[in-house]
Amino acid sequence: MVSGCVDPSVPIPPPVPSKAYGHQKRYGMEDAAAPGLVRHNCVSTATRDMWDRLFNDGYKADVVIYTDNGDTIYAHANIIGTASPVIKGMLKQAKRHGKWHTISIRGVPHDAVRVFIRFLYSSCYENEEMNQFIMHLLLLSHAYVVPQLKRLCEWHLEHGLINTENVIDVFQLSLLCDFPRLSVISHRMIMKHFKEVYATEAWIAMKKSHPFLEKELRDSVIIEENMRKDRIRKRNEQRIYSQLYEAMEALVHICRDGCKTIGPHDKDFKPNHATCNYEACKGLESLIRHFAGCKPRVPGGCVHCKRMWQLLELHSRVCADSDQCRVPLCRILKEKMEKQSKKDEVRWKLLVKNVLGTKKIGGSPFFLPVTSSYSSVS
Ligand SMILES: [Zn+2]
Ligand SMILES: [Zn+2]
Ligand SMILES: [Zn+2]
Image 1 (cartoon, rainbow, N blue to C red):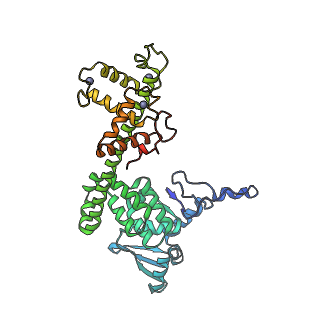
Image 2 (cartoon, rainbow, N blue to C red; image 1 turned 90 degrees about the horizontal axis):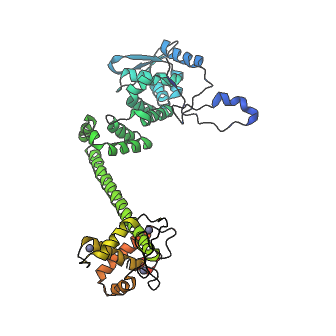
Image 3 (cartoon, helix red, strand yellow; image 1 turned 135 degrees about the vertical axis):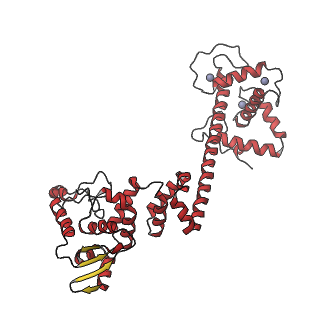
């Protein structure tokens, strides 16, 4: 049974004008199993079968194709020469014995050549054959310049036939035969499943035949791994800066409005039952309670107090207006920072820049804009 019959060289046509609607049936319909490849509906099953039969029966054939192990395939010069410019050239130079041209296609299994020649006749193939000979067909499609088969092989590899066992061969072939898309896809797969691919026989063979390529691949795995670690590090950093920003917002909110159990320090405490929108409030509230009750309460003392001091100091650096601010020590800490060492200053400026940078869009009226001199690192 014919399981595939496609002509990928035919592009999907634009919508047909309403007057010529009748043509839509002839050319339209995309093959759902192979997006981008168009089923050529104008060719009926009977016609396809006829082309298949012509190939199978070899009626009035005039070409003998020699394959490995002395096997032969019969074909028609007009058909295979039209389907492949390379075969056309071979036929021109071929020896002739009466009406017979003789050419050779070697280096791939006989059955793969058979599948290839059949495709030249009818664009038909069996899925099992495609699975079995995909690499040979890819090579043949390139060597004999049959672009529709080339695209079909690429499509099948991309949609399931590429695996950790054959990916190294696919990669090498894609570089050798100019399949840019396939080289990217196979390279990505090698990076993703490196340990598995590294253990295959194909890798060992590549190491012997193409040591430079093997080294390049190993190097790119290292680069990829470093980039991955870098991405994770940056994401984690970003999360911390974002949490700090939220803590800064919550701190202003607690000291200005009061929240649940803590009121502004300069007013009598009235329980605030309004719904709190600041996620960071809960943690910050217990930290403030601890800070208020902890005996040492010195910078560098208790770990919680140290954290609170850092938050207060960060606040005073991002605070837009210390005169109006309700956060304790805001102004004092701002004065203190003028006496800081250059090294500390650079470190703090970088932190402020990163924290404010997490909420570039919109920002907050209580904090300095991210473009302010406080946020630039000199
Ligand atoms: Zn709150
Ligand atoms: Zn403490
Ligand atoms: Zn402040």
